[in-house]
Image (tube, rainbow over all chains, first blue to last red; front, side, top):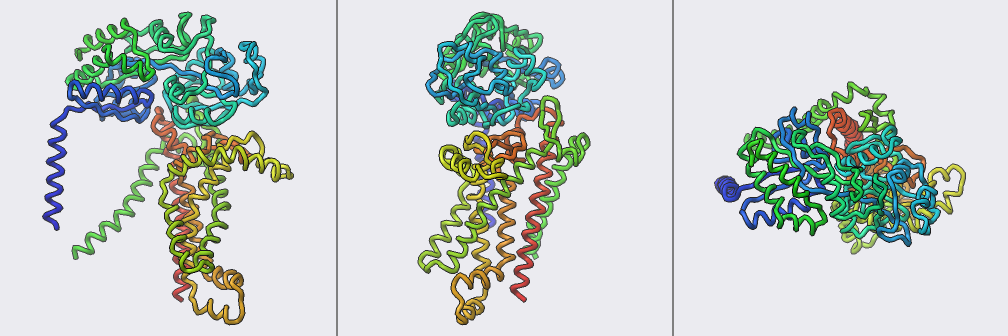
Amino acid sequence: MKRILGLILALTVVLSFSMANAEETLNGAGATFPYPLYSAWAYEYHKTTGVKLNYQSIGSGGGVRQVVNRTVDFGASDDALEPKEIEKDKLLQWPQVIGGEVLAINVSGIKSEEMVLDSDSVCKIFLGEVKYWDDKEIKQLNPSLNLPHKEITVVHRSDGSGTTAVFTHYLSEACPAWKSKVGEGKSVKWPVGIGGKGNEGVANYVKRTPFSIGYVEFAYAKQNKLTYTLLKNPAGKVIRPTLETFAEAASAGNYDPKKHFYTWVTNVKSPNAWPIVAATNILVPKERVGENKKVVKFFDWAFSKKADEIAQSLVYAPLPEALKNKIRAYWKANGIY
Amino acid sequence: MIFSFITGIAAISVVLIIVGTLYVLFKESSLSIERFGFLKFITSLDWDPVRESFGAAAALYGTLVTTALALIIAIPVAIGIAIFVTEVAPNFLKGPVGVAIELLAAIPSIIYGMWGLFTLAPIMSKYIEPFLQKTIGKLPLFNILFEGTPLGIDLLTASMILGIMIIPFTASISRDAFNLTPSVVKESAYAVGATKWEVVRDVVLPYSKLGVFGGIVISLGRALGETMAVAFVLGNNNQITTSLLDAAATVTVKLANEFTEADKDIYLSSLYYLALLLFMASFIVLSIAKFLLLKAENKLKA
């Protein structure tokens, strides 16, 4: 019996070693939002190069913690780290792909892209100041819509999330009352509403709860066939959420390699930009030049035309070409390209 | 010699794991304990990661209310099941019903959660909750329990699911306790002309009182710690409300939701503090259960 057990143990050890050696693997962890895209990319990349990507979607905060502790080859975070944190933890950071958030609603009789909201009305709804769908705040933006006198149920994320960080940043920028009463962060103290877990949780609650409103990643709204609104941007123009209007926000953003690309692209001034947009970022430990070269090789491939097409088919917006070149220069400057 | 060594290590490792867990929880939460103290932490309603101000009151309230309600829902049903299986059911039904009850305990909690969200919540919001509002909700005192819009994502739905989940624990242990009633005593009761109901009420129940109680406390421990099923249907809102039709939060749901993205030290430490409180609470509850069961066994032996 003992001998058999010993044999099995030895065999597993040998097997696991040989399997680990047979394939090169990149280990990453972090944001849940780009997970579907990273795994689609990984599948394609593995087919062409034989290099495997193992990405654990544990959340942006977890991704940052893992890369700071040097347990993964790269971390991924929806909200960019500030330059001083990057310097302190000896990391490198760059944006990888763009995502936008939309306001999903469930109001009978109203279809996608029929209702218009602006940052002021969104802010008041999420503060609990606008309580009914036929409030004059919403009415004056939608004079032609037949709005019911029903109470609004606000749906937000219950878990800490990069999506929430972007949404609350958008509100804090656009609405002083939100900034002073609630503030911004991955989780905040919500004044009203119910909380769903994950983008899919919010999508689900909005779908099942009549007269509700919630913020979700555009991809989730599309997949779940949710009704979403148009938004008025800071330039005063009513905008549709599309990959083009998301990319427009990124083009207008002030991405500076000296600041490790730390910036926000919510509420940018361009008249054609969707107002709630953010890039999801990749973080690597600065000192691991060898591993970083492999990581960069993958993410450089992810900037290719083919990878862009995969991204678009999954409703993610590729970075503008100029920004991609800026990132390549940043890699070169840090000796990992 | 080797045998006693191996089993000894196995036994001691349990104690080590418990002590180790307690130590880690205590150490990780020390920052938060220092900052907020004990009384302030458990009485503060604030849970504001942006301003770094944390309190456990709402989460503890949600945990206690869902647990208490779940017990109120589960206990009568569970004891009824146990009485049916041991005293009433014909022999050919005893086996299948007993197995079915135990299988109920084997369903993973996330499946209860999904069932709750997709099936129970719509039923609650469309039929049961409006009905409750129109009937008991109209009575004085009870009206504050059923205020608000019935969404089906609230304390009541969460408690229903928890109740269903803990039924098998109380039912199985009660059944075993009932079976421990010596048949001689029951037969003599029947012999003096007692009806079945009188035998259950006056002989079986008093005899197995402590066993049943132990079963209830084990259910209580389970209900205190349940996470996934509740996370789906509770709405996760950090507030204390009198209405059962409002969203709330529990300690475990808060931990599951916020742990991975807690990016500040004090935030993480406060989550550990919550975990520590829950650990101690369930440890105390389960110790009481164990104690009661022991007492019941000793009494029967004597």
